[in-house]
Image (tube, rainbow, N blue to C red; front, side, top):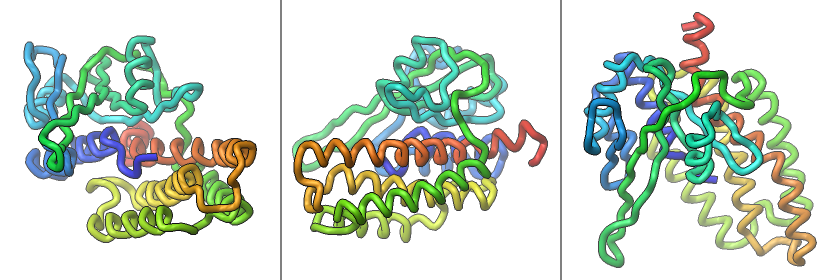
Length: 263
């Protein structure tokens, strides 16, 4: 599981920009991150791809008031609402951003690698497609997500301990150190304007996701046979699902609370 999906960055910082809490330059810098460049293709009124600054301004002019995240995988269309063409593209990418307001638009990232060997960088094209304006699939409230995560973290820890993969081997150690370094570099887990509970839920979801990722990739533990590897995957699949649901709930919380009149 990617700890910070591009759709999450776009939605979080796009929401902060739409709320007037950050400047366009700061928002775009945060969204692009370590990528080389992001462009948006298929935006109404723009016959050619445009940069993120222009795209976010155009979306606001079109009436977009918020951005939601979808993190679907086969068999679990988390955050999607259709139509089939958009769902298909989002499932292929395993992520998407859905605009609230603005006539039903969604964005799906396509990532390209460019540059010579040893200096490869990512270039991202966001494809704008029509979406159905309907409630997103299977997205919990922040409260539900937090309760589910607490239980999922206990279950994941128990499974990893039983399989002797909780933190063994250089692969696990390197992943944990990389996660800690990223957490220290970025004090802001989410963009300005998000409630403290959303920050807490997203951080916990990332920890659960890291545990699942380590269990899936780390071969130094006790589960070494093919049958045991299958059992490991089956045991952790529900945990991974809970973590994805919680991440979507955190990223979408600003829009959900605005709809309920909380903010």
